[in-house]
Length: 98
Image (cartoon, rainbow, N blue to C red; front, side, top):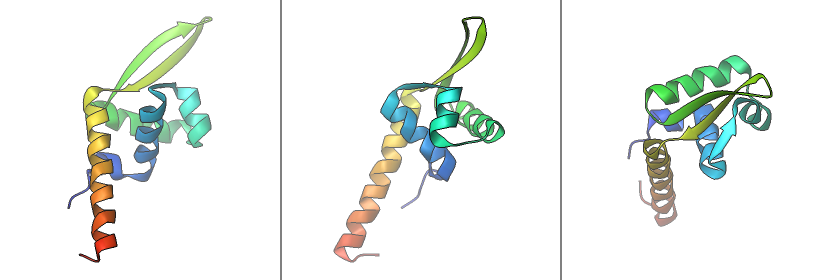
């Protein structure tokens, strides 16, 4: 059983789960709700973008820049696969297997 390192990293796991639940989020929403620093969030989202797991939209709202993130289809599938792996691990533990 192998975990996807892109998703398994704790901060990225939080970002994946948040976007999976909310569909879209702005940089500020992610930063505030997950309590992540600017630099940390930027680095993790960049890694996710490089893996084609998240799409990024930049626009101006009321003359202010706004960045919005959304999981791509591949990102959703990657997260769901990771959750499936975790569930399989829990099933094994419940059955007493290793």
